[in-house]
Image (cartoon, rainbow, N blue to C red; front, side, top):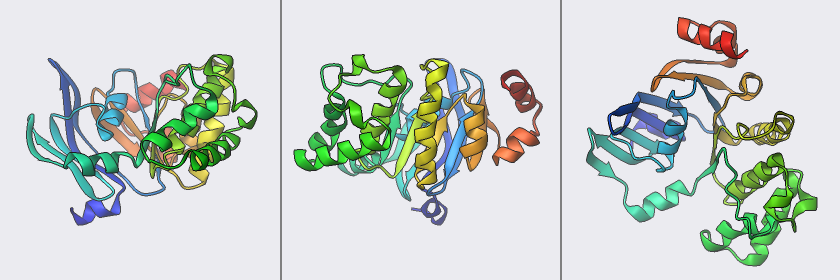
Amino acid sequence: MTDTAEKFIIKTENIDVSFGGLHVLKGVSLNVAPKEVVCIIGPSGAGKSTFLRTLNHLEKIDSGKIYVDGNLLDDYEHGKVNYKMPKKERAAVLLEMGMVFQRFNLFPHKTVLENVMIAPVHVRKISKAEAKERAVKLLSRVGLADKVDEYPNKLSGGQQQRVAIARALAMEPEIMLFDEPTSALDPELVGEVLAVMKSLAEDGMTMIVVTHEMGFAREVANRVVFMESGKIVEEGTPQEIFGKPKSERLQQFLKSVL
């Protein structure tokens, strides 16, 4: 553990990822402080989602270091393992990260309530009664108290995504990762999901959000990171990124999306 890693809830150093001959991430280093909201923006194919997925081991890195809560999870060099946290410890650390995907990935044969209860019971080993109480509170929090007994196919996309957020929160994570959580939604449903995310940010949840929603990034983020071609090109406060972009590439990108 390093002193700098201790200050940050997530710290990455020079993350490299290749898929076959495709170099997807090229030396990505990012520090995230507790309670910080970091939005990652950039064109499709920039490596944003891949980077997010490396944090909770959904993608394997080729080179670099990943620290979570001051603990070194991985240290790789050109595909060679210098250090890998033992499996049991790693599993415990990864439970501190909740993730919400573009697609909601709900169990279609289980009710909304059952979807939110399942992981706390089977993974955290809490009682069904406690899991139910927690699930009901969370569903109320995301505005779905009246949908507990419904099945996912009876819900709109925005409602399904709010269930997915409640499901991730049910594990009581320290960090929430959002991978373009509104990109699969009809435009009129986007706002209800962003409102839930905004309330989480206001409550002090550490969040890393890959998003195309520039208004959300501008309003809610503490810091905005612009990625392109597998690299972080620029980062700063929303005021700096949207008001005074330095790089020509970021200026072009903002012109095309705003």
